[in-house]
Length: 371
Image (cartoon, rainbow, N blue to C red; front, side, top):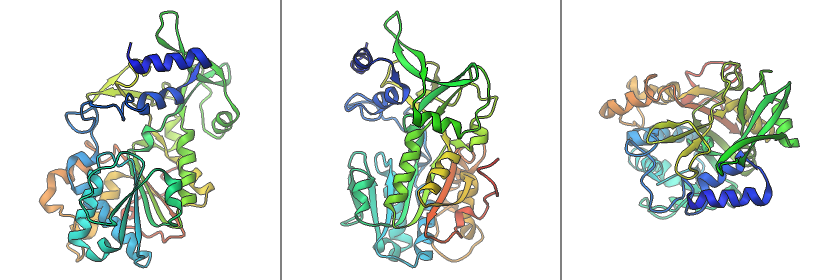
């Protein structure tokens, strides 16, 4: 048994059955032992790691995001400073790609940009003074009263989730216990008030044994983002569905999954700290949390349409800063093709006191969060 498994078992023996949210938090983020914060472990990202991201494809993804952020800066009136705020920055590669594009293609924007990294481990800052600033959390950034854009790429899917199950016409929480063999197993308990209220608002099918997830932390996070911002945009890129699809009757086992080396692991409770644990994002819940806290929902679109909207002017030969698609055709195809990453990832765009006309939403389908 690993050291982390012993820590989790000790907590269960002391406090009783544990919410899966707590189990996932320890499995992913326990200092020195969790999957994302373990020491001296192999790289987690890329072909040789456990999962593959749009950043792994090369710098084109960051260059396209930079082009969208440049437009946001322009339509907000060229504010200085313009804050680009990233949470879940990993090794900083996406930050470097965005900053390098801005310096080369939009120097005025580059001079106005202040890049904020929220949480995580500091990485080498090669972009010069005042370009990257680290903040422990969103609260620490709030004092800046930032105008700009908050964005994340594959952040919310790693927020720990609660797990529920339908039993005899009611919903119960699945919690983690220690079985008779000394291994981790599931038990069921009455839901607390916050979880029960969240479940009541969802289109859950009344099916016996139906298992799914509710991400309470994602809702709180979006509300905190909205309160922190002074003015600007929120761009959330991740894999997930609107609520009507997330909680469809055919999805009887939910979306909670463990991965290692790009392969799915059947038992999400096995070997905590050794596997990536992830659940898809309920984008409807995320949008409603933002609206509750003062954000407006501008659009919901898959990555293919989002990037094609950003690239439209460049592809049609219009003047302006370019992302370099012609020289990176293989990367462009991987990012946008439906059989690669184009429809794997979805993009939710929200705003606070900011105009709605963004290039990335020019091909968005109406009603994306209700279908």
